[in-house]
Length: 303
Image (cartoon, rainbow, N blue to C red):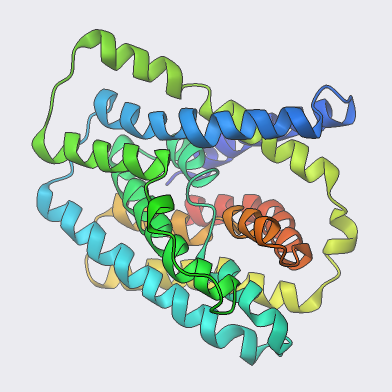
């Protein structure tokens, strides 16, 4: 992918993040406001954007390529789980903190950040693979993730698997698979609802960065080892392996991006609900998010 194209698109995203930082510093956005916008993005705009992309995009992925994408996503998440099990032990994380690093290894921000970045950088075909990753994410988090965070005390929550994001993802996949055609008024309405996603997501990200103590968070040496393995080595290996097996270029780029996204918010939200400590997850989210702008730009420029 052309370096100038990636730099231009990432620069545009960076500007949106800077706007969010400015709005937070000027007190235009407060914590209550960002929570409301976050709910709007997570429950409405982002899920609708998924369907909008399938309805309005020129999707040329075949059924065989789609099934290959499902297989690749399954392998990638299996590798994430393996990394989440082994890496915390290898880098010497305390036993009672390992579960947090395990969650950070598996649950990257494939939705809140992955969807808008993929929308900005990649083609319509890529969004199909992004949707697959989002379905895997939710299926795993509300089963494996819940149990891991609670150290086995909590049971999996099947009902929560069917969040607006998963429901709309499944709907989008059905539209693709059966090549369904919806009325123009529905398509346009969906397009309008989904279009603010990129702007709102990046503004919220900027507000989050503005509230963090980023300089202090950067001093955690073990976190940096984790970042280099999870956000640099893993995406690089994904590219090498997928190229070796002859995967299509767009599939390679998409799954590289999905491997390179920063730590997701859902584990921290769940930790807050259940009274678990959130400092490690919060630090991981902020530092990996800022770092990912550099790593994603580099990866997308090179492949």
